[in-house]
Image (cartoon, rainbow, N blue to C red; front, side, top):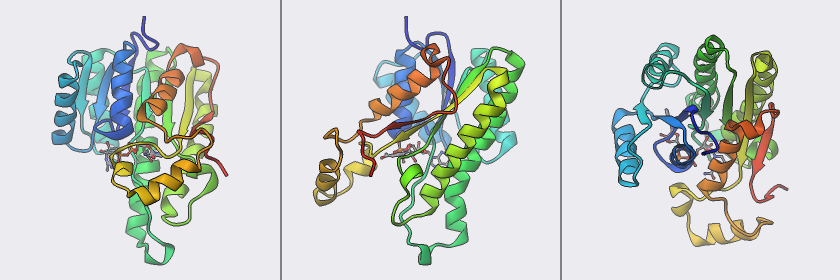
Length: 250
Ligand code: NAD
């Protein structure tokens, strides 16, 4: 029996990177999954890739505008139509930023906050309306980052957004505890995705050498934390921000 057998999970940013691996791990552990992406074409491409890897059942695609409450509510209603309920919401979609302070425009700063903070708020609201009606509790898992504790030397919108998601996590955990809806976050360190693969060796090598556990995180490391926090194994855990970073903390 899988660790999340019989649960229905929504994963935002499920088309690639960490989110795609979260989708796969949930399917492997017996969940039904709604893979959520920004455009129907990328969602279809991700579903086709999953099918190539042998995952054809128990998965559907949705592509709501994550900042638009109506669009998200309609997409989540489709998930309930298809799978009958929603147990788990993984707010994983995110954008990073490297812009120095003096070069930021307000629009660019807001764009990061929109996807990393406002979208998880909108999706949590839509999911919780459904979870409360169901009356069986639920789990929300947000993607934070190690920079949500320590900051970073440029692209301040990104750590700002991750500090904010930690605040949302702790606050919603308190607000939703009476309904047995648990809210936690996972805080990855540097994780091996396409973005990291594109960096030159001169950047990657010193980075890895600075990680006490001696390697970069793999998407599976992060996805496994999501599985744990979605599963009944973590039934008594809420309001936690779990570092998954090989101890790469200053
Ligand atoms: P990625 O760029 O590979 O994937 C990001 C996902 O978010 C994609 O599926 C993308 O479609 C989605 N997304 C981006 N903008 C969107 C929008 N406007 N609407 C809907 N979806 C949108 O990145 P990743 O490395 O897999 O990151 C996933 C999460 O992990 C993010 O929240 C990121 O901040 C966090 N994180 C990543 C690392 C790392 O080293 N990779 C470290 C710490 C935290």
